[in-house]
Image (cartoon, rainbow, N blue to C red):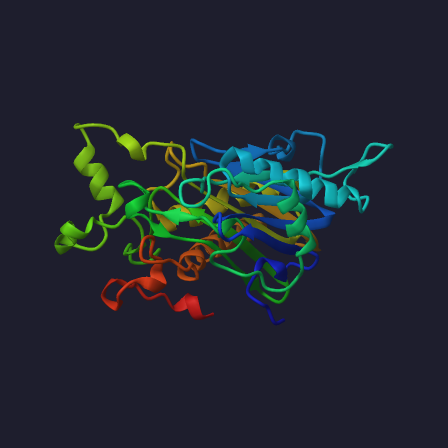
Length: 341
């Protein structure tokens, strides 16, 4: 089986982006119109979410019809209304007799500080993302929810780096597929999971770069310990939000466990992860009939989530004020073999 190395390798899952490049914000929609079994695990201390309670195993609703990832902070939750309208027009959703109510769990990230703070993803943008949805390999980097994503903000946005959105998948055995799509807007640094080297993160001010290019968020926190808090950096402006999906057949309890295990991939790739300043939220979707062990699916979910995060930073496009990995001098770049896959 040949994969396109994205979450759309899961049969029936479609992805669409919409963004305002000038305002540097956007949204990404993951459609599963026939209804997927969904789970969610939220570990950051500052989440912005909608309809995540419906995904709890002990709640009535069993199916999810789309997941929306958006910028715009809490304002961006409005983008889900456009997704619901798109699906209702197609009679997709929970049948309540007089209409169908689509179940569209949503998570947002904060990008108001790098673009136009008064322009945010709205219902129109969510609807447009649905119109763009296809099973083609989604664009990565500065697209959709990744349009305004940044990482490494302990010294403020002026010392941060540009990130984006990334996706990948893996074939396990002959027919089991696990994929992920992630928008990376972390407070901490993105690191190489095997070596711990910083790939993208907080940069030292120019006058201090004789001590090294990256400030190293953990070292800055060490210096702050016992002196003062995180100051202006301690705002709810950070998060990693994403989706893992599989063609394995799972119930709500099992797919929720997959979302929990996927957080291991986040923790391997961001330092520090799951802080009170982040809203780290991972959705998981079961959309298929392949029999599979939940432990195997969860283990590979962590791997693809980590790889999708790395692709988010390697494919991002920056500029002189807010550089991305592609803008760094060779001596500051960390190579990663998975980038070319």
